[in-house]
Length: 477
View 1: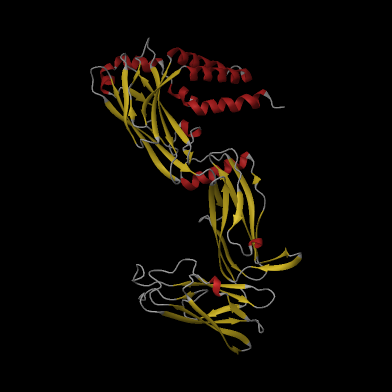
View 2: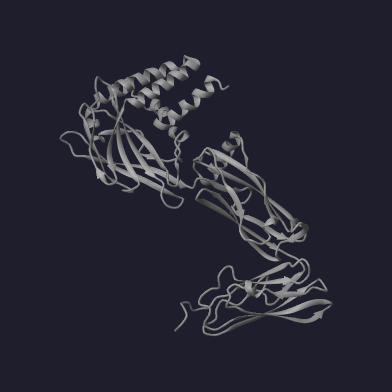
């Protein structure tokens, strides 16, 4: 059974996050401040009517709120920041917010703190340090009482602008207030600056504008990190026969206490050569370490709420069961390009997989025909383009065939013709033709030719094709 501390403490912390209680105590007015303002009333009259303690919420800032405020907001979710302020005048202040950075996704509200609730809360705070576990309970009661003592009024919602009044200071006590700016995370993940322009006006005086800003990061519900990869992709390098390569992946969320993702590798051929372990949740201490690593990387605090680890492994060859028989599954020779996709509900993120599988096949052509066939980058679309390379194998009895139906794009005219062996090694002539008036601009990124051995392994060889005409457009009629 959980102790009272385990039950109450998280609730107290949560309440502090919602209302920014931690820095309320940092902004408590002192008697010396009040007396100083009385002596400098002329100077005070020239200052902005409202005394704000910060005008910009920024996770990079060295301020108390950065320990508790989460600058990240999940796509489709809401975030907010409470700008605490004081009316230090003996007259009321009228506040309006005529403009916000996004009419449909930013809302401005004014919260007026009941003076008695504020004084009670300050008294409560001074007592909790002497009461042990009872002080935690008392803190929770005081926080809830303060919450109930705040009266909220809209200032700008969906373009509708209204005014609200902040009462004057009374009996030497400043009137506490909150301007809450809320926002909705919309669109693609990005950093954005949320702004609200506040006008504050004392009686018989001109309204003075103040801009409030919040630096916000709109993020997906989860993210993926490849351990040790600055590019955050899965780079396998060269793979030869029998090679096995593993990479550690971290799935984490800055907005949710749990994630539930499914993993799938792209393609429908040799997917059994790609294996990953079940997601293993990391302890909270490692979440903090991970967050600190990201903080150094991106230059702003990032609080990780949950993180999971999985080991992703790629086998060049792997024994698998097919039709009740144990057979050897080998990756296609040539460049390896796949994607590892993580799905949670309707949200999906994927990591590119890059590698090169080498074997007993070699392409012999020009200096640019390294692990591919280069058709050139400057030829007219109204002329046919032909390239010929030689395919050679170290296996003396190997036979190859062209899988015509898998040629991409299908308008490529491809021919594979056996040649006399050279030094006992079989070889073939591979001709690729781009017909006239078929290509305008660059070939698609997935352009390739697929060859396949005729032996029992039926192993495939993928040969990428690159090329680009110097004119672009569409077919002429």
